[in-house]
Image (cartoon, rainbow, N blue to C red; front, side):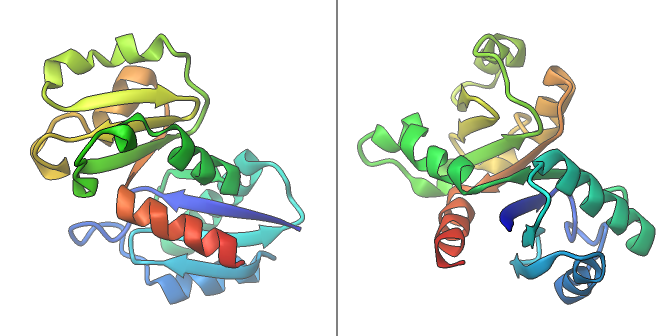
Length: 181
């Protein structure tokens, strides 16, 4: 049995793509996922399954959400090693007096090349900063996520990928939950 964490993008935000987490849990259990556990309303879902492929798990979840709820919801599926790598590789955590509230991670559907950072043209968003690590982009916002154009839509457009962003507190909590499963 493999535990996957599905990160759903764009649900329950500003009244759009509303899905109650209990209904989502029931829906996923009905198609065979086990030990389904959700965290907060923004679409973080742990599932256990015999399926090892994160891409296949993501496709199943996306397909079922569309079938049952009628929402086209992008899904990025990761495992505990992805979250552990966030803590090990986040360059911004090494900075003295870092404000954790300004740290975010964009989880990407495919691994990125180190040269992808050039495609993002991050310099036009200064003083925001970003660093690519495999299928993650570590982000440090100068003011906050709500006050920048360097967001998930921009990342997706520039890199032609599916992306979903989580704040550092959520990433921390999800890793804790992974360790408790």
